[in-house]
Amino acid sequence: PDMTAVTADDLIEGTYPVQVDSSSDKFRITACELTVADGTMTAVMHMGGQGYLRVYMGTGEEAGAAPESDCIPFHEEPDGTHTFTVPVAVLDQALDCAAFSKNKEIWYDRTLVFRADSLPAEAFANLVTAESLGLADGEYITEVSLSGGSGKAKVESPAKLTVTGGKAVATLVWGSPNYDYMRVGEDKYLPIQTEGNATFEIPVPFFDRPFTAFADTTAMSEPHEVEYTITFDPASLTKQ
Image (cartoon, rainbow, N blue to C red):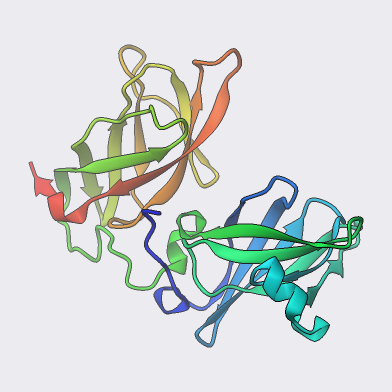
């Protein structure tokens, strides 16, 4: 509910991997590619199985009343799994998606959220970055907010920010020592100290909108990677 809608106008034309959250684990999307072109967005959703024959971007009631030509059939991949190519009106907002069950032959209501914070930085137009802000090399502090996981994890705010050559790196101090690495995209970052609360230096791809990062917690019986979103506030940047 606290997400801000992202439209095609906010993005640069191209095709990008995107995470899709589904309201049902029975409608599991294992991978998805978002294509932005001509002011519209479409997505190819790779499903975890073969349980649905067609989908409709609306409610089950609307799908049942619509002509079959308005519904989106599956495409069978070489491994036998199904994909659906669907229009995406907006990112970071709940979208109705009805799915027609092969076994039950009924429509099921699902809700999908295409996650803008999972897109690579180069997907965004008019990004607020250290370079676009014209930040001189040096050290800054900035407010940072964290969400995700169980909701109990915290990081210190404000955080230290180091700018070098138009690139920003944040020193993120967690409220617990129980993290052994962080990951942003495919890049993994280890703690910069061995005592006290877990502390990492991670890149800040942009300000003013959340981006996805992962932290591996050792507080459970086995280490477990947890997904978080992190937002740095450009209005609070103060040079030290």
